Structures are given as C-alpha cells and as structure tokens.
Image 1 (cartoon, helix red, strand yellow):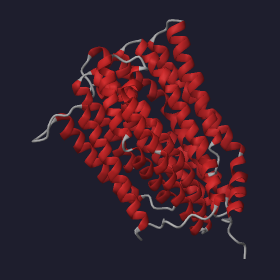
Image 2 (cartoon, helix red, strand yellow):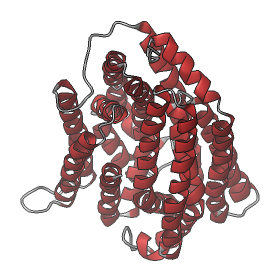
Image 3 (cartoon, one colour):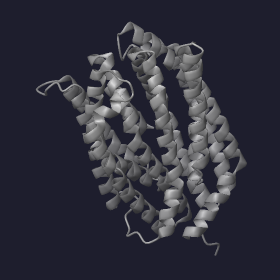
Image 4 (cartoon, helix red, strand yellow):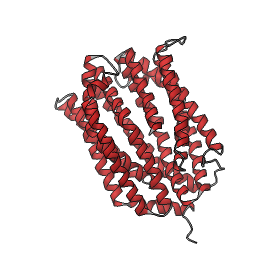
Length: 437
C-alpha cells in the first residue's frame, strides 16, 4: 500500500503541476496516459501471470519452477516493450490528434507520449520484477525501490516541470523526463535485487515450455483485458471531449483524486490477496484460500468504502487542489462524487479479481471488466449523455453502473470455485504439486 500510495502520488503530482499550466495541459497528459496504459497493461498482465505462479510455487516449495517463471516473465516484458518505443517516436502527436484534441493539446500530449513510451521496456521489467518478488513473499524490497524511484520522480516533476532552482522550466517535457527516469531506475534496481541474495526470488536458465505456456495462458486474458478496456477509454474520452476540453480535464482530475485516496488500499489488498490465496493454494488448502479471499474482500469494502464517504463530502475542496478554473472545478467534483459512490463495489471487484488471478483464472475478471465498461461506462454515457441529452450527469452514472456490473460478475465467479481446480491442474502439469510422503 505504501508503494502504491507513492506511485499514485507521483501521477497526482503530474496532474497538479500540469494543472498550473492550463486545462489544455491537463487534458494533454490525460489523453497521452490513455496510450501510456497500453504498455502498462502488458506489464500488469505479465505481472499477474508471474505472481500467480510465483506465489503457488512458493507455497508448494517448488522454488526452481518459481525462479524460471520469474526469469521468463522479465525477458518477455523487456521484449514486449520495444514496439512502443518506435510508436511513440513516429506517431505520438498523431495518436492524440485522432481523439479529436485541439492542436495545442495534441502537440503537448504527443511530446509527453514519445518520452514515456521510450522507456516502455524498463516499465515492463519493473512491473514484472516487483510482482515476482511479491509472489515469493517479499513485498518490502519493491516498496523500498519504488519509494526511492517515485520520490525522485516527484522531485523531478516539480524541479523540471516548474523550473525550480537552477533547472530550466520544461513544462510537460520536464514531467515526461521525470517519469522516464523513474521507470529506468526501478527496472535496474529491481533486477539487481533479484540477481543478488537480497530477495528469495532469483534467476535461472529457462528450460520448461510448460511454464512458458502457463505464464502466457494466465497473462494473456489480463493483457487483453487491459488492452480492451484501454481501447474503450478512447471513445469514452471522445465523448468527454464532445462536452468540452474542460469536461475532459475535469474527468482526469476527479479520477485522479479518487485514485490517490483509494487506489493504494485497493491495489495493496489485491496484491496481498494474490500472494496469500496463491500460497495457500500451493500449500494444498483450497478452503483456506476461499476464506482468505472473502475476508480480504470484506476488509477492502469496509476501509475503501469509508474513504469513499470522505471523498463524497470533500469533493469540492479536493479537486480545488488541482485547478482554479470554475467550470472544470464544477465537473471535477461531480466525477469525484461518482467514483466515491462506486468505491465500495470497486474495492470488492479489485480484491476478488486478485484472488481469482492467483487461482490462475484471469478470464473471469476479463469478461467482467470489459463487459462492464462497454455496457456501463461507454453505453450509458453515449446513449444517456448524447442520444437522450442528459449530458455530463449521465457520464457520472455510467461510472457507477460499470463497477456494479463488473463486481457482480467477479463475485459469482469466485463463489463458484472453478479456479481451484484450474490451479491444481496447472501445478500438476509443471510438477509443482507437493509430494505427500
């Protein structure tokens, strides 16, 4: 949670600093981040696969299989980041323009996108390496590394973006450089930690195709989920731009306030649940895995739901930290309140999705999230907001509908328990099931 808080704070700092420039700058970073989520989704997808195998094999004592999964996932992550480097360099500004952005928004967003895409391989490696350690039971090393990395990123954003001290005032260019530096720093230090004896995880020479296929089988639905949801975000942001640049900027701000308050807890619970459920399954205790999943979900609903109440009440004050534009402020408070209403079910979805992932089931969260976004976020906002003319309030409602839909689907999948049998089958295939003698 500490790690996630600082990562989210880093992104929040980016929005605050760009908000000091103009609403157009906020929109530029927000639109560039849509594309920036593509390599992020790949990294998170591979991270989901490796944390499942790493936690299960740690629980069963199959450490050689665990280290091979870690090695393969990190190599795959580095290679998968290379195409994004080329895309950002050649098509950065064009990618923002096709969303309907104004020329200045497209120019700034394209510059920012090219910089962050240049370090996509490092971002993948950092994400996979962190999940690898976490699955092996070491959540502190990734925290230490990312505390330093995100701290340097935040300082770099302030110094280079605003031109503090002797540094030049680079605006969005400075924000992008700080982010790129943080990605490279995290990747190098985390890989060095795995190579050393500091963490229980390690590198070995890859030998088993079974591990490769299982890693990809678990990761693929998570990657496709991320790509699909990111793809849906494009028309959703076009709908926001239909109502004006201020509305789009307001969405970025309202969402950022919500994420800063609740995402560290939700994502921390998800990672912790993945570790505990995966290791419990690896130890041959499916009943304990079920209990741990439901218990973590209840804790998430209670704590994140409480933060949602605070967010709803303090929405105006919180969004005012990001901008002083009156129109943007009004809409941003509405988006923050929409996310506040959805906060309890969002926590339930995130935690149960993490439990399913550690149980080698990434398909159920995939269907839940994609269908929820398509029907809820995109469908309600387009039909209600534009076709029936309810405007921005329909977009607020679409956020709540999306998370309600996704949460119900995931809860049913976790209750049915097919993930338990799937985990046992995959452990048998790669030779990780504990012997009974």
